[in-house]
Image (cartoon, rainbow, N blue to C red; front, top):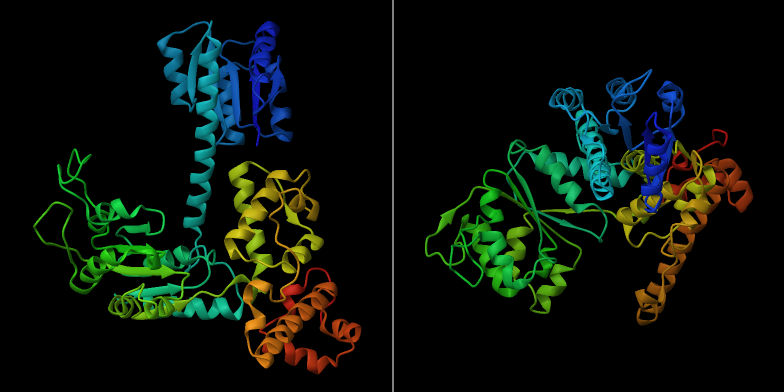
Length: 472
């Protein structure tokens, strides 16, 4: 996304120079202003990531520009230029919130560098502001969006285990939000004021994961130039979240078993046993009992981890949550990318609810983010998602060849296909009639009572499909 920059200077030659410098960089959109009196009107209609303003100008000077910009949007970075490089003016500008201060004449490289730093700062400021707002108004289960029966069950399970110190194993497909659930458990626990330390066991090379977890002593291996605290020590009195636990090597499985069982570990290169008081939450998308049968995962470790098991439903089992999730991501990425996409069209919601989501919530979030970035107006349209790339999920939820239906017994394969067809058909007919069950039943040739029964069996609610249709 291009950063929007407003350049203000009463010298036209300076504006021409600035516009020439930044027009060479495709990542910037530059607006120039020679008369600072136009600022209030411009700010009413446009937002800017960075404002570069001269200090000494007739009418509104640079300090007044700074104050007006900050009143409009605190996250806009303001850079003040002046030919009068006095320490007093620099102090006043920075005290009032200027990002930086440049004296004229300046080198091209200097102003490009300062503006790029300002763009990065502005992005981080927006992210922090968004996260702070989320924390200030957070629900009991932060970042867990949805009201479907599956989500209500998940939230009840979190509430039941959060107050204990029991080890929890989170299972479910990739992208279902296992780390968010782990954080929700931590936030609701007596350890909420202590650290939450996540580690992804699949992304750290086997050669260094022991050092990352347990730390090491200086000289314990090549490159160990100083003592290093491990993540286990960082998590003391808090929560250690072990994501993708199924990818741990057999050697590390033994050491992790001792850690969970005894609360003891040794840093690499040390003979001293250390103790830790941490709560353990693990997660995996793999079938650990199957890996145990293949001799790839320790059974005793599995039972230590699986004291409490919480299974996260895939997105296809909670389709009625998609409107809420999509709206949440719309708001999030409006803030982070400085966009003003105010709504999602009915056609777009229909499109999202008819898709397969093999990547689950993570995939939905990525699609909405790219749609927000590419949207041209104030409404997120299907075309914005189509422009987002070739990985927009395809329609349909019928079983695919990857599920190897032809290796199943005939009756089981037939039941799987019929179940998937019924689910897909009911979703589409309800979406077509905006959740009006009477109209959907009439259109499909089904009795209204029978359609209601099918909906109950599949845990569908008509309100999930209601956008503008009449009440049923």
